[in-house]
Length: 292
Image (cartoon, one colour):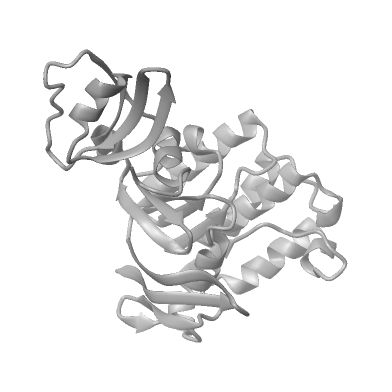
C-alpha cells in the first residue's frame, strides 16, 4: 500500500503554494518533512489527508482516490495544531470532549492508549483546551495521532512548545508505536537535529515542490563540507553538485553532494573534509536561492 500525491497544485487566489508536486509515501516508514516557513508543509499534509481540496492533481491510496472516499479516509490521520481563537470550536472543548470527538472520527481508535497517554502526560481531562499551555496542547495532538491507529499518520510540528524531556518522551513513544505497528508517520518539524535520528527518510519541501526525498543515512553519507584555499576548493568541485559557498579572505568553504557510490578525491589538494548534520544539509540546499 502507498499514498500517492500526483501533480498537486494548490492556489489561494493568485498565490501558488504547491506547484505540480509529486510524492509517494510508502507504507511502514517514518518520514521527516522539512521546509522553510511558507514552503507549503501544512498545506501538503492537509491535502494528503483530504482536509483541503486541490486546485489540480489527485491523491491516491492503494490505487483509489482519497477525496470523499471513506474507506481511504479511515486509513489517514492528520493531527494538527489546535488554534486558540474565538472562531475555533475545538479550542473551547474540554480535553475529554476533544478526545471523545477524535474517537468518533477514527474507526481504529485505541481508547486504552489514549487514556494511558493522558495519564502519562498528566493532562487534566476537565480543563478546556484554550486554557492549556502550548506544550500541553501539543500533547493532545500527539495523543490523537498515536491513538488513531491510522496506517498513514501526519503530525505538524508535534514538538512545538514541548520541553526537552517531553520531546524525548514523544520520540520514544513514536518509535515504540512504529516498531509495534509498522504504521507510516510523516513528521513536519523545525527542530531538525534532535529528530534526525528518527527519520528513516527525509523530504525537503522548497517553494511548493519536492526538492529531495531520500533515505536519511544515505543522504548524509553523500553530503560533505570542503574547506581550504579558494583555488584548491574550486579545483576539487569542478563538475560536482556544489551548494552554500562561504568565503573568508583567500579561503572558501562549500557543501558537496556526491553521486551514489562516488568516492571523493582531494586531488592532492590541502583541504579539510567534514561530515554534515541533517540541519547543515537542509541549510545548504534550501537556505540559498541558487545552486553554485
